[in-house]
View 1 (tube, rainbow, N blue to C red):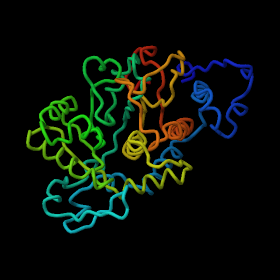
View 2: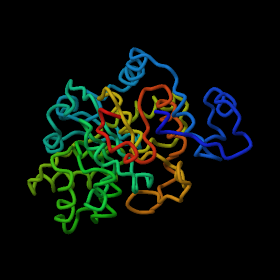
View 3: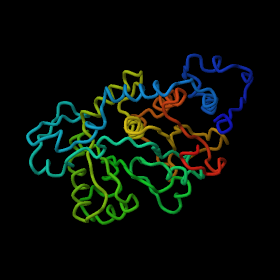
View 4: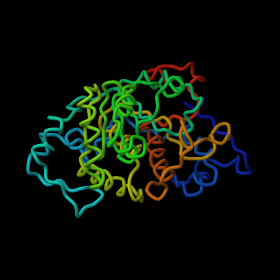
Length: 338
């Protein structure tokens, strides 16, 4: 591990110990001022037993229970139930028979635990990473917000997808809310094959109509992609879980939500493309915001550096692994070999 995540000191503090640099894993200045120093922690993971690792995931399960509660299903959301929006707590949606008919019958996660899972953020750090083969070797691959997977990106991000999220805002911006031509949306979904399309339809009332249009469109065009909806009660529980961990953000990002989901569903979780800083941790070169464009995130809604510090703490404890840098340096090894 240390051979991959070498850390180089570039200041007069090069002689300091890990405790001097990050006492008690306090990140206040470590991440914000010199983010490349985070690399040091990859070589100084806290010893953790398999039992402790399992307990960390169990704590998340006890609070949130993704297997049975993450997805709205016909089993957990019957006709007549009033569903409270997680982003508008004063608003609710009564489940009609028509709405009920589009819910999946049961949770797509069942009682399955995947051995190896890759969660792909869309950070610019994935550009020229050559991580595609390693990512695709995972048993289950999660992706966020309908990222492009064309031939220009396959070498670096792979193309295997088992679950992909879509914020309704993307459906509105990229596909005109599906109120006009819908074929471009269906064609764009072809790159994800028979993956689950996971949408937070019940976060805000304004999201509901376009989320339903996405589900109806894929159904009418007989797409193999299956639409499912986040349960707002699960998202509320998850937000509270991270708040209890000390994360003070208006709303968790899609990346943090999906990483949390993976921690409950998978034995081994690897994160790729999670790096919220402007400079590459190895080369110090300027990065684009995403591996496919430089469009900036809604910083008033999410706090990526704060989320990253919490994920990095889990990495240091051995609960998950945050991958930074290139994969080619390690022979593009398969997920199980790394």
